[in-house]
Each structure stands twice: as C-alpha cells, then as structure tokens.
Length: 117
Image 1 (cartoon, rainbow, N blue to C red):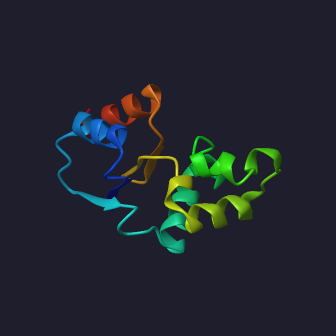
Image 2 (image 1 turned 45 degrees about the vertical axis):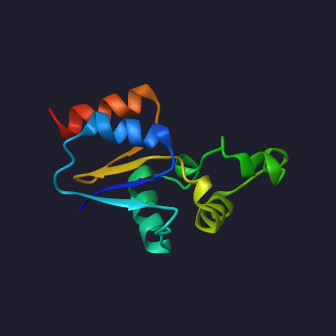
Image 3 (image 1 turned 30 degrees about the vertical axis):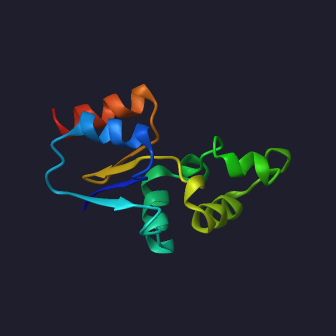
C-alpha cells in the first residue's frame, strides 16, 4: 500500500505533498487526527531499519523533556513516537515497499524520482 504519514498543520508537509502531486493511489494519514498505531510504526521500522531513523530530534518536546541529555535506545524511540506525533520525522512516504523519511531535499528528490519516474 502506498501511504503518506503527514501533519496537516505542517507547511513543509503540504509543500512536499504538492511537489509529489498527483498522489493517485496514495492513502494519506494526518497523524494528529489519526495517530499512528504500533503496527503501522512497526511496518515503518521494518522498511527504515530502525526507530531512531524515524525519530525527529528537531521536535520541540525533545528539548523540553530534556531528552538531549539522555541516551535513548530503540525501545525509547518507539515509545516516544507512539506517545506523541511530533516525534515522528515527517513526512513518511511509503511507495512500493520503499520508505522516504523526512523533508531533506535529497529525500524529497528521491521520492519524486521513484513515484514519478
């Protein structure tokens, strides 16, 4: 299944989704109104290789909770992502068993080239 996990209030997510348009055959999930489930996160981890690669260290809560001072393990990353949507690096694009995580230019370009060759 082709899917995009995004935040509808995030201008960067909106811009990237516009760049990827048309998104025919994609299921869109706003992670604020439809939180990710443990099984969805497990699927993302399987494709990405680790929970850490799905984790956003730019999230405001990351600093507010003092997590910058702690050493986190995979279980911590998993728990935090499920606990609050801001910890998921966004957007997460899944296309034909390939995953593209985050909003770096390189990731967005790779997603574009894969989705619309």
